[in-house]
Amino acid sequence: MQEVSIINHIVVPAGMQSVAESIRDQYIAYFKTQDGFVSSTFYRSLDTEADGSIKYVNTVVWQSFQHYQAVVNKGFSNPDGLNNDGYKVLGKGFPEPIRVSPGRYIIVADNQA
Image (cartoon, rainbow, N blue to C red):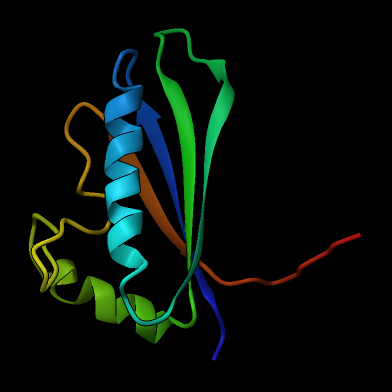
């Protein structure tokens, strides 16, 4: 099985940083209870955008694409992204006007010192 990384680019309007960070923490607490969760890393840009928003990147690593799908499950097939546990997945758990652009990736190369 090959690990899969879910990488979300998140744009958070000025004044909503604590909301975004709190929601992310709630989701990671939930993901930690799920089979196949490996790790998560949360990044915040050092730069503020011209409109005052801040960019974040959240990565969640799963043991396999199948583990990821088991958590997301029916979230793929409904507009709210609700999974079987009632969590809004696929980046849909953040309130407007926070914008999330989710992506799914596998490692092609891992170059470390």
